[in-house]
Every structure is written in structure tokens, then in C-alpha cells.
Image (cartoon, rainbow, N blue to C red; front, side, top):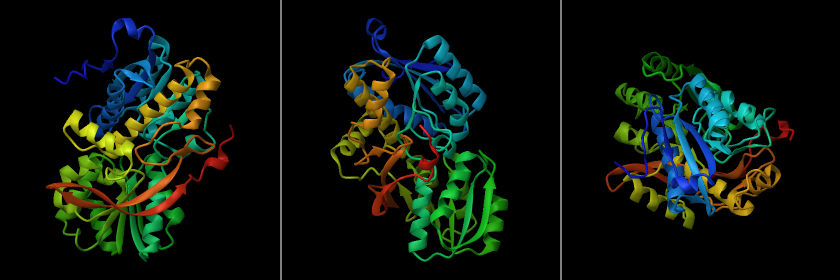
Length: 387
């Protein structure tokens, strides 16, 4: 068994030695490790853990105790875990949530309790806008961002009749709103599917009948695998091109879908081929530690850990000084794997968004940067945030 991981029935603790743990900064990670979407949470956890391992059990030179529990993609379970981490474990920082509906249920309670929450993924519009909080930071993106980039890309490429699909939950609605914010063509159809849906026969039949010139879909995890396989089986892969955000074409999805994804264009703030020292070290380190290529989610877990590490280094590990630690987080004094990185006034990233294409390298499907959709892109909700 990997010596980094000590698996428990409902959770897992990754920590320094008992003597050191008494003085360690406690970080609670709630993420999805079982059921639908578990590959996303596993990658976030592994990326975060890699940063801890590279620091010898420390972040920013400060010992940390990482407490990891599985939310199984259930909001009630996530809120119960969060309450336990606040009351029993007395965590200083929380992180890890994949899904926006879980983030909306958990994050406000955590931040109101005086604990910092660092999101490595979910960035719902509510938390970026009127529901923002000084103790909440998102190191990944605001939900709309990658979809906005694809809307701009398809506009630039002259697509004028695009069909839209996304799951019916906060991130799905943010996704299509973001796409439409920058897409100037016509909408052939706009469909919200059930979260966790696996059978898309009805949606594909309706899509075929609409005769669009392109399909934009946001279906992360197993949803995307099911849709792409069924889309290919319906004979549409070479008739109507599909486009999406990186979530629909991460390493797990590509491995499961296979050749049907080859050549597909998608948008992302990160790619394994970005040419900067932090990214090269991350990709090499992740492959060495886990024997697989890192995904977008792994990169976000890694950056979340490094952001925390930079703030711990700047404050000497004194998370109790909330104002100083918040200022250190806001400064984002770490080298991001995506290159330049800074926070906007609502504690969401201002960053470049890239255009990628699915390619095959050494027999493995992966993504390659072919252009840039946005430079220094900020989200649409910052003006609604009053901090």
C-alpha cells in the first residue's frame, strides 16, 4: 500500500508524527472519494498531498496535519463532516470540495465560524458575488470562466448554431450562462440534464434533430464519459463537432472514452505542457508519485496547498492572526503551475485561459495548448461582492 495513504472506513488522516501534530496547523479536506465523480476528488487529494510530501510533511516550512474525509457527493454528508471538523477537530483551514451544490451548503458555515476555506475547484457565482466572504478564497476559477472562453472561441471561429448541455445544478447553470455571455451565435437547444445521469439517448436524439453546427457540453466525471461514448456510438462524432471545458476532457475521461475524443477542442486555465518551472516540477513529481498523468483537478489541489504554504510561510504558521493570514493569502505569494496568478477583489483568480486540443502522445490521449482565449481574465461577479 502507498505509504502516503492511511485509509480508514469513512475517512483518512495524513499527518506528521504525533509529537509534531500537536503543534501542526490542521487542514480539513472534504472531497469526493467514492461514487460518481470520485476521480475528481481523488486527484484533488493527491495533488494536495504531493505538495505536502514535497515539503516533508510541511507547507511553507510549517508542519501540517491533513484530515481527509469522503463526502460521497452528498450535501448532507458534507455539512455533517464540516461541523465535525469545526467542533471536534478544531481545524484552522478547510478545502477540497468538488461540487458547487456542496460548496454552497458548506462554505458559508465554515467562513462564518472564522475558519478559512480555500476552494480547489467549485466556484459558484453565489460565492463569487453577493455571497462572498473575507475568509473564502478560490484558487481554481469562478465556475463561468472556462465556459466563457469557449463561447469566445466558437464566436471567433464562426459557429452560429450551437447546442448546449449541462447538468441541472449550480455549476451547470453557471456554465451555460458563462458560455452565452461571450457566444454571439444562435442557440439550437439548451438542455439541463440530471446530475449524475448516465443515459443520454433522449438528449442525443433531440440534439440530432436540431441539426446544430456544434455542441457545447459541460458534463464532468462519469457523466462526460457516458455522454461522449453514446455520442460516438450514435455516429455523431464526425458529423457534429463537440466542444467543452477542460472538465469534460480531463485525463480520466480521455482514458475512458478513447479515440472518440481525439482532436476535440477544450478550454482550461492549466495544461500539463505549460512551460514554467513550477508546472514542470509538478507534472514530473505527480507522475513519479502516482504513476499517472495529472489532471486539471490534481493541479488545482496542488496549487491550493502551495497557496496555503505561502501564507503559512509569510505568517510563521500563525493562522490565529486572521487579518495577517488573510492578507498573506490575498498576496498569492506562490509560483502557480499555470504561470501568472493573482486574486481579484472577490478572492477569485485573474488568469489566462487557454485553448487545448486532445492529442495522442506516446500512445496516451492527453491535451496540448494550441492558443489562448483570454489574457488576465476576471469573473463577472466581482462587482457584486461587498467585502
